[in-house]
Image (cartoon, rainbow, N blue to C red; front, side, top):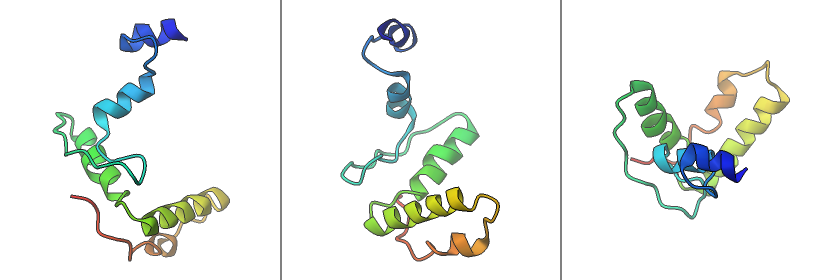
Length: 98
């Protein structure tokens, strides 16, 4: 495993996924973490995902965590029945980070 990590990241104890998160992600993974400043990406899809969708989905509130957990559980339980009503449940969540 260390050889694999070293060949991909240059460090034996640094996992490729960890390097990816450090390099591209600007939204925090946990409530107690600070949001990183927006990064500029030369690829428009990266720009839209990392500075748009990813940051909008996480707004540092417990209400947001509850909402996203509920939405994910509904998607798992009812994968064929995604409706606008399900998406409107979290419409009252706090505004996204800027």
